[in-house]
Figure 1: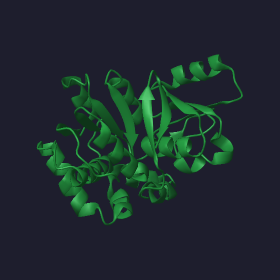
Figure 2 (figure 1 turned 90 degrees about the vertical axis):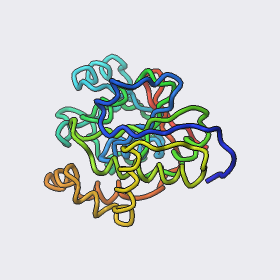
Figure 3 (figure 1 turned 180 degrees about the horizontal axis):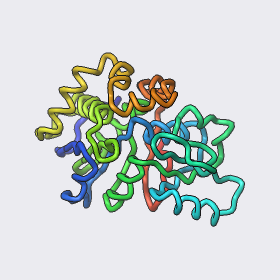
Figure 4 (figure 1 turned 45 degrees about the horizontal axis):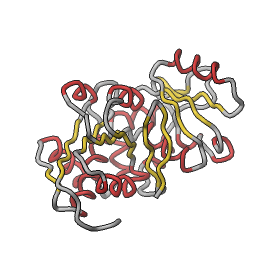
Amino acid sequence: MHKGNYLLKTIDVLLLPEEILNRNFNDKLVVMIDVLRASSTIVTALSRGCEGFIPIFSPGEARKKAKNIKSNHILLCGERKGKKIFGFDLGNSPLEFKEEIVKYKKIVFTTTNGVKVLEMASYASEIIICSFLNINAVCDYCLRFKGDIFIICAGSEGQFSLEDTVCAGMLMNCVSRESHEIISESDAVKASQILYKHYGKDLLGMLKKSQHGKYLRSIGLEKDLQFCASINLFNIVPIYKNGAIIAFAK
């Protein structure tokens, strides 16, 4: 982490994607959080040599995009209801995205929640992607951004997500600890920090208790929870720009 003097800015947390519709993101930084599992998968794949992601919410449109590219360096990946879509190369488990599979590849990617947020907030000045896996790298990026910041929790099919909110609280604590010149006073900010304080010492336990975490366990994906609960495994920040996600590395 790098301490120093930063410009006065405000940070807010949006607990549901639907709140995007009432906000102005011009000249703002958006931080998208989808712990289980799009954020974690994107961070992992980029850290393992993937060249980038093309996120598309519609599975049908994702298929068309992958087919039109016609390259051996394209993977078609994604999920619905947590499970790999039939005919796709990979699903949305970060454990699937191994270096020998994703290195030098571009990934056309569709997920239920995270990709939806990226499309809804696509007009923001900058959009980056956060998980527990890269929390310090995202914190540093936020501290260097010269404008206001919105942290958006992807949620789960329009519902409040415990894990995304705890991650938002963790990011808020990190940013606040490094700079006292940032104004963060909304109820959503306070709620995220309270939840992080309560669950921060046992992230895996929190994921197991969360609604989506329970669902993933029920379909045999408990190992995904163990991986997604890891802190600062990677030092990259995925950036979404011009319809693609690439890695910003310090």
